[in-house]
Image 1 (cartoon, rainbow, N blue to C red):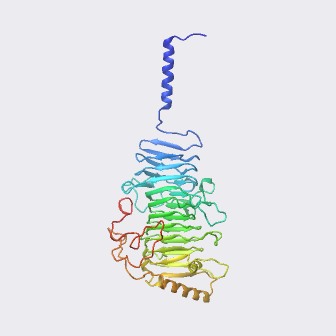
Image 2 (tube, rainbow, N blue to C red):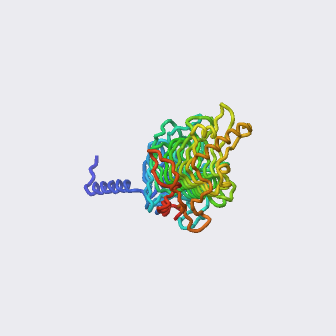
Image 3 (tube, rainbow, N blue to C red):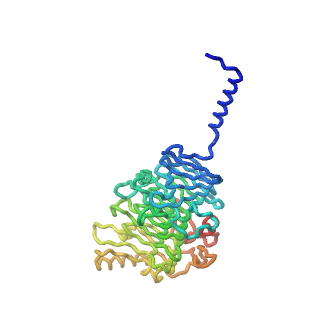
Length: 466
């Protein structure tokens, strides 16, 4: 064996050291490290995320960069995605399987905590946040989806969420843990979303599938979705301070046995489009599936589109639900409650009779003809006999007459049709209040989502009140 001279030996060690040092140096971009791995491709202050199956992993999206979703990006089971206050996340355009969205899968968590001064913003790639897209441009990317182990009332008990191809196993939701925790969302604005993935199948602004009660969801705005603002599929998520504005379809939608608690919801329909302020379904298949959909909603403010001929709220498919201390204004048609006849059939009317559906201590104004019989009606199917309908209409009339709602008193809320409008009521909305349950709900001395003696809590962090 030959012996190396000392100078050559030193040079060899120096070369080896420089090689190891270069190998450890942080990389500016991760380009196709593996066909199954997720890419984080850095270009200056932008990072593009492309999911090849492994999801984001446990990582943090920092506010010093703009993060671009290229296709459907998942937070996989066992991972936690943290998003710093003030972070901007943009979705690339695309439809079908090329749609861009952020999906928090079952068993994953998200910690996305913005502030009133530094909200987290999800928007379209084309949006420079300075007028590059019109406020009401819709369907420019997908949306945000949370999935959990909360109970559904469907058969089978686990489903694939709307808006994601059924071939994607990470799109499953449902289970038997209503206390499931998908993490925390606070002070978040989701804009210009709702792209198509197929015929009449769009992604909602924020979709909650089987989300459990330990998940924190507060101060969330969905603005200009091409589908619903918020849609709840089963589970028991508890939410406060939600805003659905200028969405093409329904402001709030629930189905499949949703049993959450909610307070301080604001719905604002576009003056030129939009469907119901609330589309409330009980079940898909079977329609009498348990548990029944019986959420509790306090202090909502629903501002309709009074020239579109749309309904205010629909209860159907055996949906229940309890709405108290809320304000509903400016919608062409009122609340309709599905009714079916027969001892073996279930319907939302039966939920009313059983006490699972309540509409009490609310203010309705400029709805239908401003009368209780015009605002709250039954919607019979073809098989309901005239005798049964008459008896049921009498029952509904007696219920509504004693439910402490008002139908012709103006709460003094201006609408988006005028400049500098405000959802804060100027009339007296502090009387005749329903009592609040002892858990979750904040006890307040007013109806609707806004304290008439306080500032508008939606100002500053939303696109609606920027």
